[in-house]
Length: 420
Ligand code: AMP
Ligand code: GLY
Image (cartoon, rainbow, N blue to C red; front, side):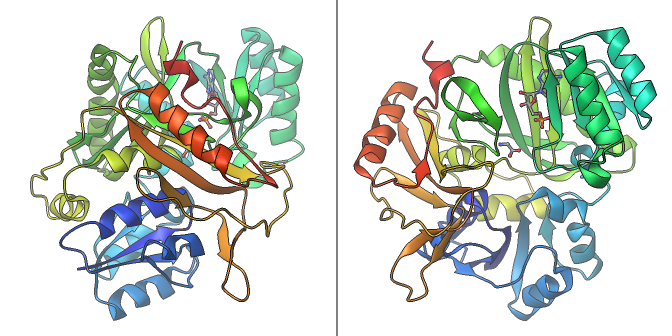
């Protein structure tokens, strides 16, 4: 069969590469993809994620069996609804089901209605009311834009003044545009963060290994928030009892809630969780795979990925299996300056082979096609599997030290929380 993956980053590279490994798959198209993916035999299609009708036309013309959606903005724009309307199979939530991600207010009120553990909160569209709430609650406190904001919508404020300023910037200065016309203000939670992913269809769900992202740009969790600078899976120091509690108190009730609200969920559900003194609580839900978590989770899938998704789409019981030994760890290499301004066009090291996989995000061939050059903030990611976090980390950093990463940077402490 032929499959279409929508998106262009390292996440989509990992999804598409795993699909191409399948015995039932003949080719995998990625729209728009990036040139680095072609080194793995993936076919990039020059259509952007917002051109829904061109994507539909492509899927029909090429007899694509089904489509897998990577990024949140495509889901929020209703790409799944449009594909389904013309009878095309697609793996991802509808626009209404994806509201779990694209409106923090919707997610919070659903959690409150179905008693899912999360931070206490209020939602505001008037600055004076937001200010009064902040003054009453005190700091630390967290200010979140209601809508999608490319990872820029959350301010963890350590002082009341900082919190009021963040609310002012979103509600009055309109700094985040429409995303910030409403804000969710929530209680600051303390604990270790981890991510729990599941393949979902309605009330059926199939859990993936736990993962931990590293969102800050620099070592020691310093510097600005990024899309994610590295990850590992599973999180070895997280007891199974925490995963079990997360399933019972979070995953099951949210899927039930979505069905009761008339928005049954199909696709990947991403629960961003924090392990507090009172047990796991929800920081956020996303309606898709995480980037860079996907690049460390999918290599651990030992069953046939394309067959698994086909079965879920056809409402058959999928046979999903995971490698249960060792740890998979990956380090993102980004352009110097990311997540702020950065240069493009830096020549990239050769693709790795054997025990280290290179997943590409912002990569493009030079005009003569001879060299692969940087073309985005996050550029590529090296991933390996080893017996322990320490061993995987040592192997990746050994490789990175050999590479010429002039004009690029990476964190040198991915996996550090597992080594304490
Ligand atoms: P989000 O975009 O919702 O994932 O938030 C980005 C980051 O802000 C999270 O990964 C957390 O580190 C932090 N954060 C979000 N909400 C809270 C909260 N209620 N308490 C503490 N930290 C938070
Ligand atoms: N790794 C964070 C995200 O995908 O949102």
